[in-house]
Image (cartoon, rainbow, N blue to C red):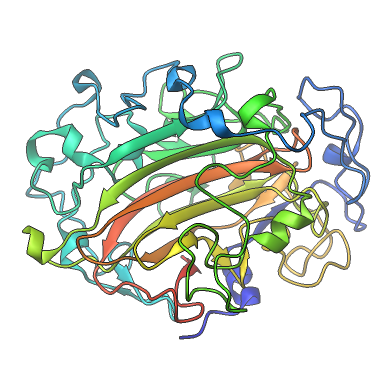
Length: 455
């Protein structure tokens, strides 16, 4: 199976919001001292080699405490999530969609299994039976379409209502009412003229999950997370496990396969996709402002009473970064990664063109200046980024779909992580939604058969 060329993916999805310059210069908003809202003593960059020196601890710090530290530091505000057990406080959950009307239609291409070569969506009984459980819940996993058994009632026997175990949710403590993750109805203020709905809103159910290496304000009265323009320079980690120079556990940047292209002969510990190491090394292995969460779940199987076998899964996401475009091909190379540990495969599942999701990996052509062919004059200010904080200070992709392959009935682990590289100031954010089981699946040892596709 072949992958859609990178330039086509970016044509379909990339949006740039890099400032007011029309002469190819770097963004004045992010390249001028004093533009940051961060409290650190760093200075802002003037080019791709002079981003502020990190104030975080030097390399060699251990992340060993991350799996034992109390997650209580992330519980400010009402989330409905017990971050130790994954159980939901019943007081935060109300009756969801009517079972007679809540079935998701897969004929419009919005849900179900996918052909990763063409992006064509196929119907899957597991996806058709999916009932969102987040309309009355602020649980982080309900927001993306998971852990619905904890919502009770109609979700107990739902094929998608898998029960998760060993949930670990790790994030820096809140600061000034903000934190590194939020559950919201939408992100930003741009209204899609075609649908008359917020562009960065739910693609499944009623809520989305936002995670960031920076700090996000709580949703407003309408459930919308709105970030002030330029408020994307936050040092949220404050040292310790948040700034230690290792990937969030159980992730590893090291190659997990002896094969040059990866995906086969996995060692079961390191990155069998062999996609992370080059980008990790580009960032000097200097991970900062980390947040991550992980859980185990069991794939539906006919043998276990479900209507169909799940041979894979998918979820939708978009990626935003203040590093774009000034720091492409530099050490300031923030990463968003999703890690799978299963019987046949261990490693990164969010990769494109053989690289993980970073501003450098998402760059559509060889770096030759401050702007790309989508925005040759670097005018920026893409209206889709209104209210995200990134309209003048960086850029974003459009919606993508990530795909992974599993065995029916197996219990496997997924870990989501996002963090700065090379500095502790310039933020990167991801929006996650629309988890679906996939009846077709993808096979990681068929090169490029899993990964991400544009939506």
